[in-house]
Amino acid sequence: MNRHLRPALAAAVLGISTFLVACGGQGSSPTAPSTGSPAAGSTSVVISGTLRSGSAFLSEGTGGSMAGLTVTVVGTSITAAVDGANHFTLTGVPAGDVQLRFSGMGIESTVTLTQLQAAQTVTVIINVSGATVAVEAEQRSGAASQELEGRVESLPPTTAAGSLKVAGRTVLTDASTSVLQGGAPKTFADLQIGMRVHVKGSPAGADLAASEIRIQNTNTWLPVNVNGVIDSFLPGATFQFKVGSRLVKGDDLTAWFGTGNTSGSVAMLANGVRVEVKGQQRDGYIYAERIHVNGTDGDPDGGKDDDDGDQDSSASIHGPLTALGGSKPALTLTVGGTSVRTTADTTVKRRGDTQTLDQLKVGQSLHVVGTRQPDGSLAARHITIDDDAAGGEFEIEGSAGGVKGTCPVVTFGVNGYDVATSAATVFEGGTCASLKSGAKVTVKGTAQASGPVLATRVRLK
View 1: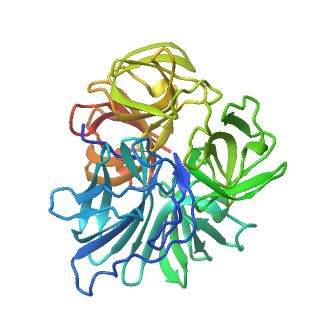
View 2: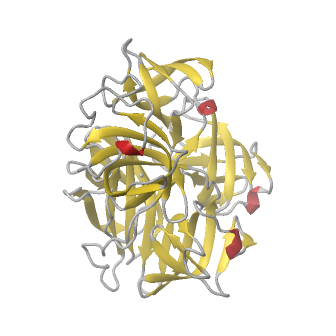
């Protein structure tokens, strides 16, 4: 299947900030795109982007150079190279639905942008993880309207009454702002930190005055992973530091790993130390549940083996899942001929959404990042489901987008997957006719070797 789409850099440019997903991301307000808006009367679109790295193929940590990647508008000759600041700009892009292909440095993956309008300027943040990419945040600007998509990072009392921050930008609401979820009316009080939302409105200085806020994903618990070098470190029982533009806070409940210290403490941290943080999005910061200390910048292992027995700082494999055994969370997988072991700390993602170990099925194509063990096996830290087995059982949850067709035969997208329904599809929580773009759905169906997932059941929430 050609469905390699995936739904955590220094401060981004392009008029919006990064934030995390499964989940969600965060960052500071970037500068304007390097290319201006399309000329009046133009029928084309300008797409500007910034990439952030969580990839084993790229320079380790936030801000790692991705120069060498090429971005192409599929089906056209429009292409651009990613520069040393991890930016790219595509001009003359046709309106409508487009796919962007990212190639090079061990990566071959695509993302889809739907319903582009003539004369729009689109700015995106692209997260690179393993061999796949995903749109982390997106903003669209026209002559008088703007759209912003991302995760809610802050709410009152951190922000002013009636305002919130989405992808680092302040969004203003008033009595005329509508808040919706799957077509059902909601209120400002229904918004929560970590929710993914789509905002429509008009510019109000540097802020966005919202006419509509659509809640796309209510998964506020999605984990946030941050890799990079510490700066602005403030020690203490409740400590904090920055990795790039993102603020990280921790306390006595934070777990510690790395640099040969089996007990671990905040004493392992200092400016210039390279860390991997696993945490949760909170109001304006990431709460660190686990910190893996890799050493000082330029010496990822700090001159020692890690506490978990790693002889390499990282290893990765990509291949088919041919065998699966054991009991959760301690599973034993065979991926591309290599034995892979999972633990309670292993994260699983599909198209940017956090999954459980239950979603692993024989026949899937997986990308595994972990640490090589003395027996040659791999202890998995992150598993990405790149492709589902043809004919295999498929399940995905997210927001429907680009709904097209006439019931009972409709097509739509969920987190980068194309889904098709038929007269045999069972709808729960609503009818086929009530399926609209933005609706939260759970899809069960059958994966194909090519083409969309054939939905056997669609549950509307």
